Image (cartoon, rainbow, N blue to C red; front, side, top):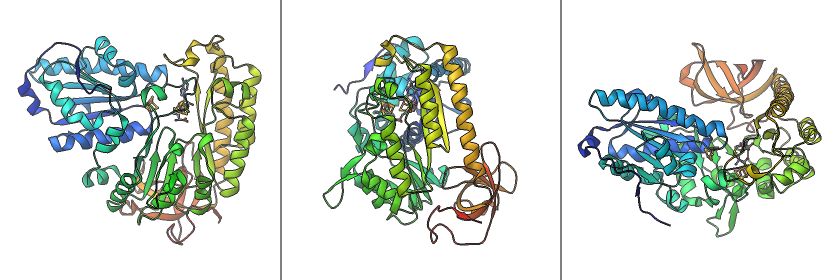
Length: 481
Ligand code: SAH
Ligand code: SF4
Ligand code: F3S
């Protein structure tokens, strides 16, 4: 694989300007892994004196960390680049330079095409190159547009910038931690195996070191990330082969890390050790995002999900037997090619039978390069819209029922940030619901016992009560008030 930087265009610009470029703005699209990666980019640039800012107007370097998952997501990039072009022109009129970079999955999928379509771009770099960002920025500052998409993912993990103590503290008391990247599943609708490459797991010691660092700086909750996070595997200190379950047991030993979560998991990779972790680890929150995509066996097969609806039901039963208060969330695609009305009814039926605390629903979007895009029998837009609306009604009903059932109950809440109104603090329940509480800001970072008093559209309201906190009580267990 070539490590060589390709010069796509021959334009030059004064090298002296590079010294002045010291403020970076990263705009993040897409999934949590992009959020994590954006932070690693700013961490990687910090030693070169780059300070992260919150608006492109103040920035000398603007990076769009992009998502290719659906057509709409990918197209957003080009409209944003149109806006940035105006900003860059205005700066140029004042004799100032601004550098624009495109990172993430659109960068990986489209590469040089981006520079062709949007010549305003100085730098196109894929998800496996972020550790080399400082060098790529320097190259771009000397002249031609830099397009870099060809690196081994192992290199990324080996050289990934560690979060700085100040960076961790500025990001709050919850943090993401990537443990696995890439996907070997090749669902026929999905671009991820092409944009993120083959599944690679990060070594145990690196993960433990980063988790410890986070905990040392006051992080209380860590969400492990991976496109197929439960496909993570590694070698434990005991020399045995570990899966995500064993890793969670290890992370639960770290002092100060009181809450653990992981996302996104594939139903086929939920093994016994992981289910045991849900049963035995008080730190592992009782919430699981377990996408099924469709409730029809015919469509599951066409999607190459490699499991049936019955297998999904059985799996859900096993996990719920291990952790009875577990809340499930899901992703659904409506209108996959060939989806009949009967197939869609099977999806509704699956939702009725499982009962979700929340779910994301998407209209199928044919993606270039995926087998699904070549299938005949694409479903009409109006049909997709109708199905999406019907599915959303059902899911909203389930979500409301789940939230309403909380009223009058007690749970622990991790206070995360200032609330909407003065005197309010926002936190999360063990089931990931946002909770508004009257509390002083000095309690941010604490896990406090509360009683849920009411529900709004998207969040719960609660009052603090006296009692044990999560460290002493069994974490997250729901109790009747
Ligand atoms: N790794 C995750 C998926 C990441 S993409 C997993 O396997 O669950 C997040 C969600 O986007 C997917 O679960 C799917 O519901 C949706 N999605 C992916 N490709 C899509 C497409 N071509 N059209 C519509 N939705 C899609
Ligand atoms: Fe995409 Fe399927 Fe892999 Fe998830 S499991 S990232 S949906 S190919
Ligand atoms: Fe999007 Fe890439 Fe994540 S396509 S969902 S940013 S892995």
